[in-house]
Length: 211
Length: 187
Ligand SMILES: [Zn+2]
Image (cartoon, rainbow over all chains, first blue to last red; front, side, top):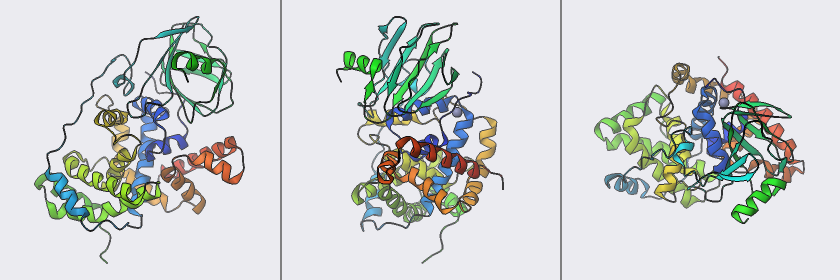
């Protein structure tokens, strides 16, 4: 895969580095990072900034026995580490470690599935597979939509995106993605904030999840 | 009041923990980091007791992972920060299954190989960022802190300042892009 052309905003990368980003967008950004050395380097700069901030904190007062309790804990045997197994090796890391249910048809040429995050079961994360040359129905949404292109490519009024690209779409923006003609387009998409969708995606969620 | 430990002191202590399970060295790391991690977590919105729990869990992880620390990749402070950050992440501490989910969210899974560029820059990065942080304007410093300490900064600020959310977002993006450029500037 070539280096991606579209990246999350620095502001998003900063929140990712800080751990201050919702679980759904975090998965989308993490999947982007796995294929983007440039953004990994940016994240590392923000993590270094986190280290500097940590050093500069005014120390809090801990309970008197804090160190003794920590020592007692390190003397206890370490819990077994769970080494996650890839569930779908065709998917990029870390998405491949998640439960990915079967695709379901939702519109002509459009299939979808919901990705359930064990760390955040309520997160609004879906994958869409749009057939070659097919148009995804027009949709708008509230909250920022984070999209990572997994395979193929698509075009909308704002640009052309291919595998590896990450797109942040602000709320109240309507777009009509058109899949490239040379194959299926697969995307991973997450919404930030409470689910207040309009139109097509809202109907989709209502139909299948009962929200 | 003793002087703050140097980056090299910390590396030495951590190596002693990794090689000899040296409790005195661990005690020095604890004395410096535990109260600061707790303070950081309180700023990030946890109550005093939760913040202390995260600090304690962070130090337990420091002990257990000491052998995995690579001084060429980051300062000890940055490394401890990332451990605490992962423990802060919502849901990570609720169950082993959830923790595994968060663990794979690390972009440093075995699937990802660092580029040569990333590795070469690693040893210089902390020092460069530390110098750059000192040059941020007070406004830039507070934008940076906001993203570290506030879970949902945009909607809150929009409400407080009574300006549209989209405006807050575009300003925050511009500010952070500028800050990132400063952090990555060669001296
Ligand atoms: Zn990128």
